[in-house]
Amino acid sequence: MTAESPAWLMQGAPHVWRPYCQMKTARPPLPVVATQGARLVLADGRELVDGLASWWTACHGYNHPHIANAIRDQLDRLPHVMFGGLAHEPAYRLARRLAELLPGDLNHAFFAESGSVSVEIAMKMALQFHINQRRIGRTRFLSFRGGYHGDTLATMTVCDPEEGMHSLFAGVLPSQVIADLPVDAASEAALDALLAERGGQIAAIMVEPLVQGAGGMLFHGPEVLRTLRRLADQHGVLLIFDEIFTGFGRTGRLFAMQAAGVEPDIVTLSKALTGGTLPLSVAVASTRVFEAFWSDEAGAALMHGPTYMGNALACAAANASLDLFEDGTWRAEVARVSAALSAGLEPCRSAPGVIDVRVLGAIGVVEFAAPVAVGALCEAFAAEGAWIRPMGKVVYLTPAFTTPDADLAILTAAIRKVIGAGGVEGSGGV
Ligand SMILES: *Cc1c(COP(=O)(O)O)cnc(C)c1O
Image 1 (cartoon, rainbow, N blue to C red):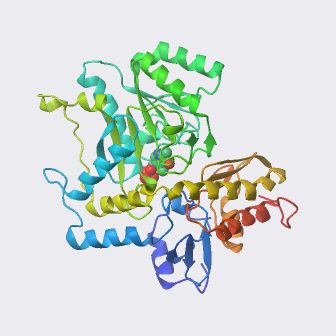
Image 2 (cartoon, protein in one colour):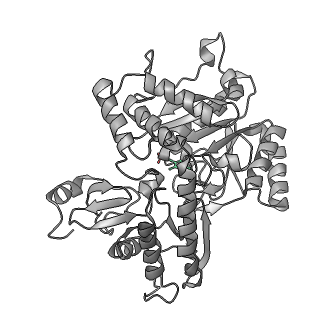
Image 3 (cartoon, rainbow, N blue to C red):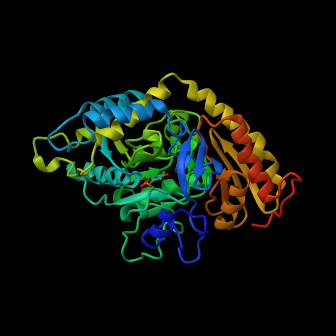
């Protein structure tokens, strides 16, 4: 922190525990005092173009008036009531709209506050789906290397074993079945064999469709999802798509699963659900899953109910965000962002240490052979007017769909310059 750091930052810093951070050695966080459109306004008056849309949430840009007004109206009328035994319009309307937007019969929405909790709920639904039908022994999940599904204890077990800290917490976490994605004939045969052997122990297969996000922005083709649907059906296992990152336009389709034309039994959504304003998540189940809980037996019910379930302010924000998707202009915006990322990042292929450059929808990725120095890079990008925070071996952009061309140019120029691409002056040292 410097002499110009705001007083609130210096006074609060000893008391705030920061995410994913060795606080002893990390640089201080950048103090943000306002947001507008695609930009963060810092305490010293500088503006940074946000290359990440705040962990993939603010898809329409910051402070969108339509979402802000919806939240304000809801705040005056009914900010929150408990969801047990009570109902309110924003949540019921949102559930109906999600059922309409999602393909197939993904029609039954269970609300929560965070992505991880919705994944936990999807896992609980899958376990009890089998229990309620007296299919015993299906107590495990099958998930994939490179996957990320959250930071809570149960979701950690289905993350990539190395990234997910499985070894640190060995003995605490139940071990799941971790496989390679079936991307070719050999890996498909291996997965089929694994399911033939252990399928009877598995409640559900869990996957992020098309893009494994936090695990390194790894892309796979839609045929992988069709293979998973077929194998899940053959082995009597449920299929869960975690669209917390990919949902709401990020890959160029409203939901990534639409590229494959297959539906899961349960889908989880969060991140861009409220357009980056309030925390909200949802696990949406198919009719087949829902019907396994529909019974005269009280014990067959799903025993879950977060305190802030279906928070009315968050649901009002989500409804307003869906309004913005309704006119379809986001498709052209994502295509525009996609083209700018492709053109702007292509020269990075020749930069030192770079092994791949890839773009899908509004996701642009520069992958290095080895993990990069996150703190130093963040600082260098900020000096170029960009907020970009790399992850592991990747420097990536997931900007708001509404980011103006000039701001997209600032983002890609910052990456090119800092990593030393395309003959632009720069050290290339990461
Ligand atoms: C971010 C993310 C989660 C976890 O969501 P939180 O809101 O951080 O708990 C789960 N799955 C995927 C695919 C994510 O990208």
